[in-house]
Image (cartoon, rainbow over all chains, first blue to last red; front, side, top):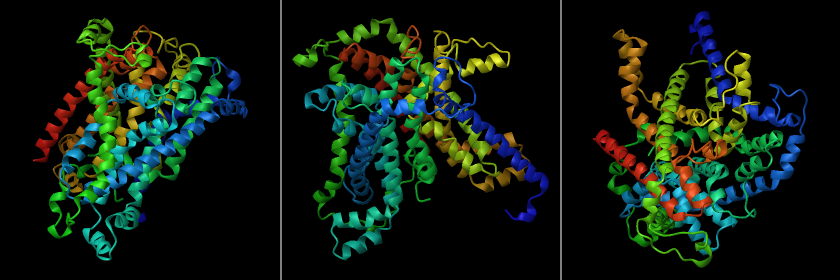
Length: 277
Length: 314
């Protein structure tokens, strides 16, 4: 907008919208502020919490780290594993479905869409009995596999629509140079699809990090306990100790916050892109 | 941005590919190598559970089953036991109320915010992305935070209501009459960012000329919204509502974190009932029955969705 066109009144109105926007944001983010505020007042216990922490008391956080630090690591490990599985399976499939005119492509794409309507608890219900038979209950690998299922259909849809936009000439040129299908995929297609690969990976990570249901249903011991499950069981055992429960909650929300700041454009692209087809 | 936009849906990209761009399918087997792992994975993690749940609903599971491996067929026993239980009807009703209430709230608030953010003002982009934060926090964690906020005696919501002279003793989560409403309100809070982002994306696609034409015709803002914005936005609205339905109807995390289905089963839904039948009572047969009902409801909606899509595509 050209500077001379901005009249004082219009400018004031625009700042008025900013104020309204900040108010909306304040209401929407208040619960998260309250989570942080409670975490910083561990001495309040079951009593009412003040609206502003009067001093920096990190004892809630140190207790939360003691109790939940291992679970945070478990979450990290499981989520990274799920991302690797998800991308390793989804990226080639997305390419195959975008590029090769295989028989059944339509059916497979349709199938990826249908998976969205299968409730997770139904999957867990059937999976649990099979996991018992296969010895995958209470195992990292079992949980990684289950969590990967949260990201795979999404990633296929997202990457496929990106890979469809890669010009056929580029791929043919690579193949003309004698590169095989696999080499073309690894050396040409994947680097070109970097953005959609990152977006898929981020979402696969967030889906897995947020997972609670598979963690709850596919584990019967404390061996593999992600932080979501850890916090849920924490409130059962530490009802009076809201400070450290909230501190643990803050820690569990950190990856989402970091990703939102560092990878904002990928997140926005993922929400609109992946939900589309 | 190179990622697809919402309006890209329904376009058939394959049709536009010139013949020369098609790879020669000399070695279809090698090509299948790219796709096969994903197909196998989806069959195992989505196809198999669907079939298995139907079978399980006709089997008698007990806590002993996992030691003996024996789950004999028992005909329609599970089905009749579940349907005869008054809790099933309650859970079904709660699920429908919860889904309808959540969708209505999320959609209206999300649309209002999306329209609001189409205005140009300083910090628009920053505010718009920060508002996503509630949606990115693990749902079970949001539930626990709200459980603290809604506490009857020491929660901040009641303290606030007290301070402004309203009833500050509302038993948000502890009264059977209030709990479902409270859970719906929290879920609306969680769903607003998602609705907003998608609808905002859709609004960006409405051609400017349409607005200019409406302005020339002297249409009021409301009139423009109703006859220009809403009709153009319709496909996006369908997408948002269907995806919202799919994720809301099966909800589990949030309710377990907020109320565990209580008090007095006031927030028991089909999702929580499946969980409790299978993983608390270890009656996987009964859990499978409720799960199948849940799938059936989703499937009916999916059919409507695909129908709507097809007629729009023509």
